[in-house]
Length: 156
Image (cartoon, helix red, strand yellow):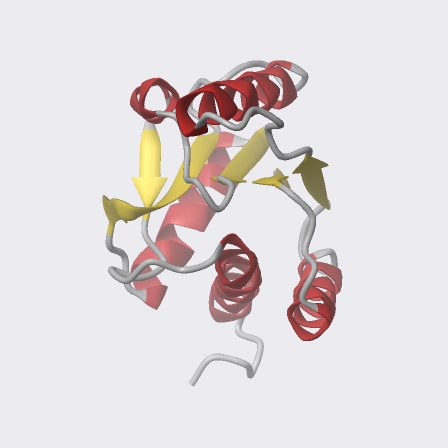
């Protein structure tokens, strides 16, 4: 299984950027991994901007076979899994094979229509997170899940 983290926007916060890079490097020890950074929408109208960003996300997904079963949206209203549950989810996806695309929207979120198209959504927290914190936290949780399933002494 390959994992891609599709994100709108670049990280500007240097400490969070370093943290995210560290976890991305750690994940690569377990599975092929790639971060796909897409440009923020340019429109001043929030709805138009979300539509622009949704188009970019769809294009990134189409490059790897479409939305399908291998797309997961990180969303504050998504399914709440504990660490063990998320690790089991990743194990199931690994058995399925192919590419698993995790998606993090911009600071404005993700277009409602795209949310409906993505078959799975998970939450990192019931609280709203900045997209930069969401990226760092998602990467840490992916790494933690691999450590748990592979018996590495990171998760206690």
